[in-house]
Image (cartoon, rainbow over all chains, first blue to last red; front, side, top):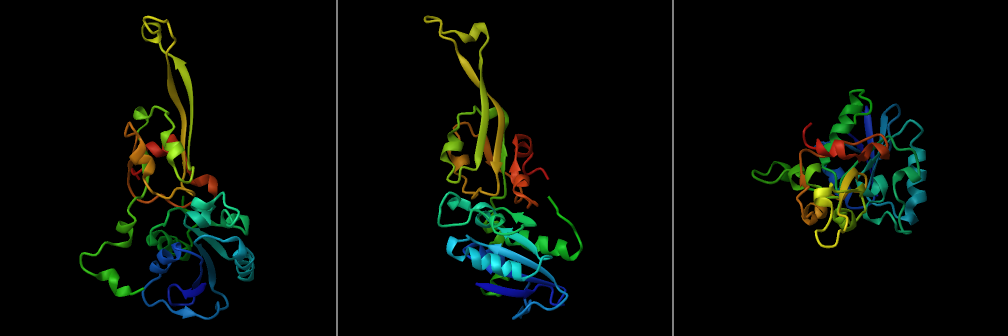
Length: 134
Length: 127
């Protein structure tokens, strides 16, 4: 369900991708070639949590707990329509209609699915110290 | 995923494969008929409109004196947080008031920032 990626290969920024459904294909494609996969988040690294896919109600607590465990300073990205607002299932009782129902969200990337470049560009802006770009 | 696929000559890039980036509203063609609103699978389109009586020379049926009205568009929004980029609204519009446009819609810091009004939609693809 989860991959922990040293995005730039220097330990400065780690992306924790919570791969929940089909948008995970696109978020995986955004990963730089050869980026190391880690078993744990290194101390001092900037942490970006990416929620990619539909949040089914049974895993909602797991998602919330995992994001909380990454610390308050974690930058949370909702990747795709389902993670943003529930997508086509927004009125279904079986899903959570958006990551914002579980935790704080710092950036929302629209699309069904979004292009991988949208995630890659956002992560690069974060490394460069860029704030929110709208 | 095999990363070598990214460099396959002639293969579509990921962005090209999902190349429906945004939708432009051509406001002067929109009659506020609501077909796009009703057909959207995620209900991400909203329209607000009001009716106005046509001027006297156009406003009455010659035989029955029936008042004729026309819809005037007040607001048209697309909630990109919900949009699936399926294009059904574009396909179903009888007046071609919607069309694919430009690069992918940018992300935002909150859900409100992903609701684009008719002014933003008119300029879609121009950034």
